Image (cartoon, rainbow over all chains, first blue to last red; front, top):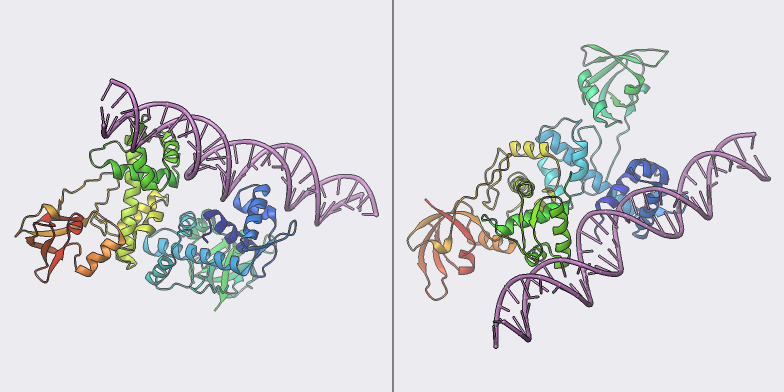
Length: 220
Length: 220
DNA sequence: TAAAAAATTTAGACTAACCTAAAAATATAT
DNA sequence: ATATATTTTTAGGTTAGTCTAAATTTTTTA
């Protein structure tokens, strides 16, 4: 049986909200994320539970079943592959691709996804540094640090972002912070936790805590 | 205002069925093409007429308004560009792309279409030889001949197909008849109008009337 | 040209996905 | 631990796009 556009979105969002530890997702959180009302979420949860895609006990929140997880990961795979296509092949900025990929991710053809994957050279990460699940549905989250966890004097590699908002990504563009950039934390302001960070051995930038909290990095 | 997936499909089909002379399309023809019942078509026609996308008088069939034509041509442009992408970039066969393009054609981003067009090198024809409307919405149907109109002894270029069914396209593949092939009509059987056709100066093939009627060709 | 046939529309109903308002269950705080 | 607040579900309703059956209009045919 085929899942609808809307069902796929719910599964994808439940996956995102339940995190790697598979914690229960609340009705209100889903209402927020889907921009619908809690009552509508309840309706959909009943339906997804009937289809065996989620574990759902009234008032107790939901988690994905194995079969729901499979569907969610397929959607995520498609989303991230299309984002690579849009950035690498069509020349979109990383701040422009989310909404379009949100549509493309629901195009239902297995062979399309696999041919796209091959065309793109089997990329492992999307333009925001998020890992792309493989064709078998394996998704391994690399354990990056958040820039706030980096000590003064350390040099780290910029590997991804937590916030995907265009405004945030554009801010990074203006700062010259791209994936793969080398960030050297030079100073951390005790008062507001803002940091001085040297980018690629070049200019030094002041980075607010708000920004630091959304940068995923890796020790070299 | 945004047109729905379904509305776009109706407009595209009305465009196709009303031909280049803009003849009225009947309710039953639309029911057939959309795989719905006539009553459902009537409902949709009322809606499209209210939106100013079609000219509709009860019992009199429909034609597209200028604004409906614009929408239809945009959808056709997207459909054909995506088909080029699927064949040229992803390596699909021309018999495999129709259904996938049917989904992709409804992805709603102007800039996506224009970037895709540029990426593909502004192609003028899709993998079946159908002309691709330009960004301004100009669609010029080249006036090809049908192979049945070609006289014995003439050499023509294979330029397109009328039937897009996978089974027909696969039959052409097996016969070595591809876009751009040179077809030389050697004989026409009086009885059943089947023809002997030499392909690219090589092997000679027997082609049934059913096939001839669906081959678009051009004198050299 | 009137009767029969075919095409089209109307009437009334269904499903998916949403809504609001009210009821019920759970969580929080005094 | 009970009252209050919050969260979630239920009840009943809406819209888009579909359906069947019946009514109406147009076309065909005798």
